[in-house]
Structure formats: structure tokens, C-alpha cells
Image (cartoon, rainbow, N blue to C red; front, side):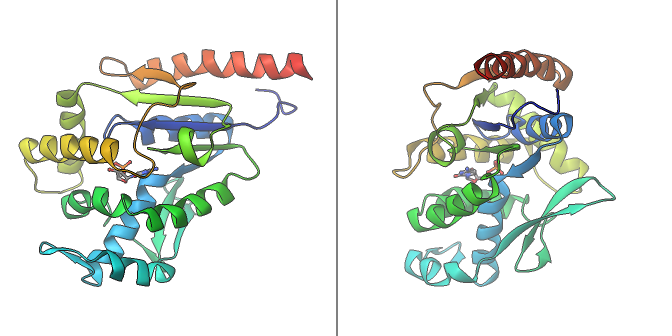
Length: 238
Ligand code: DC
């Protein structure tokens, strides 16, 4: 990459647990771009609702959530020690609280509420206004940045995704079974793809990456070719 190359927006969408975050983070590191995990934002909003009993196993009080939306303040703060951005909810570092199965079981319902999406999308667009950003989620190429220069749609076999997420959760000390992880992932795929507002779908101009049998190094090689062709095109246009 040359310093004179114009910064672009890289939008990564796809099914749950396809490794979007690891892939997006690597790309951001390589290009010295900002990385934004939009799933973490919906997860933090879900944690807020759980904490203040706005959702419980008895159900979801949508009016109450909307009434409290302005109290949900989400930021990303770079941690120099881990060299990663961490999610903060109202000033508290919630990075280690937003990936548990309770949050995972409620996040699709919270993220289907149009008012929640409006608030998050506005924040995401603000974060990307100067470009030089890699953002991953479900509606980045379709809604948040429909003009993104690179759009990638990630997929992988369900069993492989479930196993990857299970291993991650076990390693970070969570007590879960492979069956409940597989159930959660397939339910989220369904809810995320069938909601009325900004459902998960491939943008017409996105390229598909099925990484079922690919290492991260192979995925980076794949990306490098796409990035070079986009940058080459930009150079020729200038
Ligand atoms: O990427 P993730 O699995 O951490 O995302 C958690 C949930 O948040 C996902 O099931 C759907 C929702 N989400 C969304 O609706 N839109 C996004 N841009 C990102 C995530």
C-alpha cells in the first residue's frame, strides 16, 4: 500500500461465527485502518437491557427499550496492551460480558427493533465518515455503507462455525455445550435474515467468501487480490 492511495471503506457482512471479526481485524491491522465490530454494539445494547431488566426470559418490552435508548452510550477504546479496541457501555468496559450465551440468546431480538438500528447505524456512519475503516456486521454493505469500495459476504458450514465458536467460548472459561452453540447460531442466522428492518443479505455487489476450509492466511491472500484490484482501478482513475 502506498501512502498516496486513497482510504476506502471495507464492509464485511455474513452469517454468525464465520470469523468476520478476526478477518476484519487482520485487514485493519495490515492497512492501518480503524476496525469496528458492529455486533459488539448490538451486544452492548442487549447487555444494557438485561442489566436493567428491560428484557427477561418473560419477554421483551419494546416501548421500554425505546424509552431508554438515549441512555445507551457505546464507545470503542483502544487497549495498548492487547492492541485491540474494547467495547465500553456507559463508561464501563464490557468486552468480556457481551459474548456470553445470555447476551447471544437475546441480541437478535434487540437488533431487530428499528429504533435500535437507527441509533446504531447513525453512530457507525459517523465512525466511517473519514473512510479508512473496516466494519463488520449484517447490514454494512447494504445499509450502513452502500457505497463501500469493497464488500465481502462471509459464510461457512454451520457445523464448522459452531465448533469454532464453541472452542473460543470454552477457552475463555464459559461453560457451554456444542449443541447449544449450534442452536444459537442457526436461530440467529434465521432471525437476522428474516427481520423486517435491514435483514442480513448479501449486497448485489458483494463478493462471497466461504471460509469453511480456509486458514486466516489463505483468507488474507484472497483479500489482498481484491484490495489490489480496487486500488489499481482508483490509481488509473486519478
Ligand atoms: O457479529 P455478532 O455475532 O457479534 O452480532 C450479534 C448480533 O447482532 C447478530 O446476531 C445480529 C446483530 N447484528 C445486526 O443486526 N447488525 C449488525 N450490523 C451487526 C450485528
